[in-house]
Structure formats: C-alpha cells, structure tokens
Amino acid sequence: MLIKEYRITNNCTNAEYQVAQLYNVAEMSKAESGGGEGVEIVANEPYEDEERKGQYTHKIYHLESKLPTWIRSLMPAGATKCQEHAWNAFPWCKTVITNDYMKESMSVTVESFHVDGDRGQLDNALNKSQDILKQREVVVIDIANDPKSYYLQTFNPAKEDVNTSFSQKALRGPLQGSWAKTCDPVMTCYKLVSIEFKWYGLQTKMESYMHSVERDLFTKFHRELFCSMDRWHGLSMESIREMEKRTKEELVEKMAKPVAAIESAK
Image (cartoon, rainbow, N blue to C red):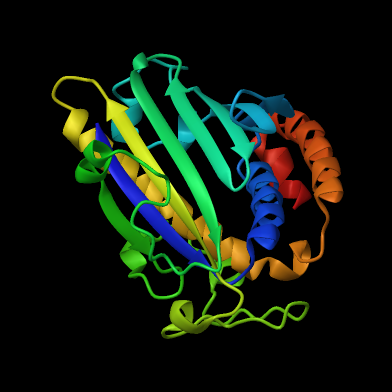
C-alpha cells in the first residue's frame, strides 16, 4: 500500500468550498459522461452513523476508453468498471473506490478534512496514528505554480488558468507568485490517499501510477474550482441539491447517447 497526503490551499472559505466542491463534481461528471461511458449515480441520500451525519453517494464509473492502453490490455473487456462509495460529512469526507474485476485486490481510499483559515501547516489534520504518519508522503499542491508535468494532458486554459482568472463576484484573483501565503480568505484541503493494488509484479508500478492520476485530478479539479467561482459563488446548499437531482437525470440521458450525438449538440 502506498500512502500520500495531499495538501491543497484555496482562496475561499470552508463554507464556499463546500458549495464549490459539489457544484464542480456535478459539472465534471457531466463533462466526462456520454456514449455508454462516464458516471452513473446510483444513490445520493442523507446518512447518519455513530460518529457523523451527512450525505452518502454511490456512483459507478464506466471508464473503458479513458484508461491507458497498457492498463486495458491487462483486463478482459468490461472489467474496468469501478464502484465509488462516499460519505460527505463536511468538513470531513471519505471516498472508497474499488474495481469489480479485481475486488479486494484493488482499492483507493481518500479521507479528507477541510480547515478554514489554514495555509497547509497542520502536521496531522486527519488525526492519524504515528504508524500512518511514518508511512505517508506529504505532497503540497500549488494550483498556480506547480510544474506543468503534474497537470493532465487535457489542460484547458479557458477553464483552468488561475494565473489569469478573476472573479467579478468575489473580487479574487488572479493567483500568482506567493498567493497561498497572502490570500484572504483561505482554507486548505488535506487528503490522505491510500492506494492498494495487489497484483504480483505490477503493485509498485500501478500504485505509483494511480497516485500520479490522483495528483493530476486534484490539481485540475481545484484549478477549475477557482476559475468557475462566478458560477457557484452565492449558491445555497438547497440549490446545489436541486442541481444534483437534475445532474443525475442528465447523466442517464448522456450515458445512453452515442458520443457523436453529444459532440454535435455542443
């Protein structure tokens, strides 16, 4: 198992981030779905256990063509489907992803904690044992200054260029230089990611590769989160829940459409 803790500082408050995160998850799900692939929402409902209460979601990811060829070649057709179970009791969240084909031999667990007014200086934000802290590698993601090698190849300047983006509603941005040390408001996401891939001969390579994917996704997501500020700033949680309901219906339609039909409708 390979464990890394990612720290992502953002120019917003915790309350704003909660709305922005849900807004951008919905938008990203729609963008990545179509032609029988993408995101299928099975459940999105309140939950409560002995420790917390929040929102539980169950999603299925159909990823066949989105994976590198060398990974697809290792699995039979249709074996790339992944299950995601998530418990969002903000500011704490937990997500567990498994693969239907590999079952208990593959898992990605992301435990997150969001801290208002923080710039990434907490050493144990998730209150983990010393054993876990010794195993983890801390990775600080700077969404404005990280080398391009850490961005997805699908980098879209119009949606992700925080170096030039300015919010008319919040009067924030662009993010440049040592922005994370001086911006106001500020908060940091702490994400402890544990990846296990128990396949003899491929464990080290796959766990390292999957962490590189997680880093790319975190970078892309939080860049888009900042650049989309004028679309989510001021939205209420009630409006976000309504948006999620509409998104679930849209995803069903997009998954059923061939890719060509979706492209022509853009």
